Image 1 (tube, rainbow, N blue to C red):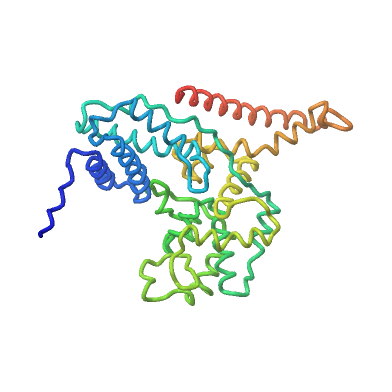
Image 2: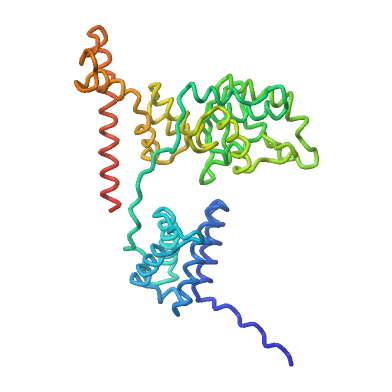
Length: 358
């Protein structure tokens, strides 16, 4: 008895639309990570829809999408925990992107997700920020008499100096460093963007020592054709996770209980620069943020100046004199006026943005 041929997939079905959308993302040069995220979220949705007899894009309406949104809210992970609002929003953003694209390319008559409201998300502050003494204690932990210690010190110095992401550090190439200008070219930036960031002489010195003393021994000629800067003990490029696993023990050894690894250096660099008087726009450029509102979270962490003023001027905070020393009053007051006005402007922009998104 011959087996019946498998039924061909319906070219008008939702999975076919998702496949076409993901192919379009590839053509538009979206990162594989973004495409993978969209595909996973949309596959979850099409499976849910198929279980309810919804197989074609035209059958998807706003009430259907709102029903799916409620299903995401009620969904539980294997450990019994609910999906976070951020994770729920990630699924819904993928759906909105799919149907917006489908409507614009005339795959459907109208966009059913146009009025779909996303969950309100809290603006999360960086989970951990080190002070100057703590970061120096972490940097001093590697045993620089060993090849791995030299490499690890160079990695951490580069992360701290440039405030780049772990993913970006893992993707650095040897020739991305410009010793003459003191800069680094970030090719593997978020969203596939490139940018040039400064790197301090101390960090360059450690990277140079790593290139001279450690990397020639770590490199495996057969797999070193990419000329990746930082290599594992097996001569392979780092993954972001592996890079974090190398760095985290040094943070623990320094007695720092704050969470994070690679991003801890990024958050610390941004916060300490703002505390040192750096303009927010320059920090935005360093971090590679497309929107300055993303950078403003660091102004909320960088409160040391406000704390000093609070202690010096608040009647309930001072134990002896509720006033600043008169000698420095005018200069400090002028500086704080500027700083606090910038903070107020940032808060106002954020409130307007939240209202517009509501």
